[in-house]
Image (cartoon, rainbow, N blue to C red; front, side, top):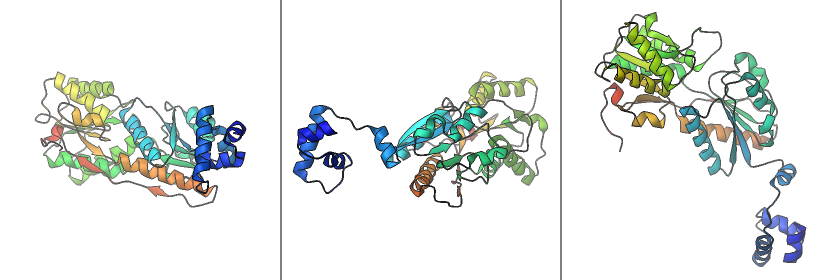
Length: 339
């Protein structure tokens, strides 16, 4: 900055004002400084600026796995929302590891950011106190409720109930559900909450619950969805619909049904969850629950910006839950095309 000031014939303070785009610098002076910056190929030290201002202009995002379609598309939506507000995003993949998630909350590599949007998969309700940090933090997902930080959640139970009711409405009664937990624990989880919605829908329709139709999966992947569907078929279990607890499971189920010569939706209707991009382009296209991913991203970024601006001011945490909708496609008999 001293070199730029000497070349432009101005003070270091004036160079700083130009770099920070202060409006009261004369046009001719600003032009001289910008010319000097260009000639010297000067780049401001963003770390030093961050130390002085207390801001880096960058937020962190910690998610379990970017190879999963939902988290990849969520990250994309958050990046776009942050960019529209003049912020960059650094992403940390925790791989669903408890220690890595704790490290992310405690700061870790993301401590060099202004705040963190955090989607845990290993931490649970008993870890709520771990979120009580002075570092700005917004929680995503259904692992922890009523914690000390802002939270953007989903209508997991009601949306899963709506998904099951959609299958019931088209005349299906033997509805398999894939992706449940092997053992239902005391802690909240997406799988557990969605299973609750499935069971509520069956109860309301006076449809008997068949334990053979409830199939657990440790991983929510295409291969897991295909293998579980093959097992259903091999076991001789009678079913006329599948509710997959995410789209990747649903895509795997479509593959296995096709291999077995079962027609979708004539023989078996299929609905997924998350409304990822792949769902629209599978063959047949996959009906899915849209949980408001774009709104989740926007709300999370805006809540975090507010927390960053407050600079430690104590405020009661807020919970935001975006709306959901069922996107009907070919896998449940809807043949219309999106225009």
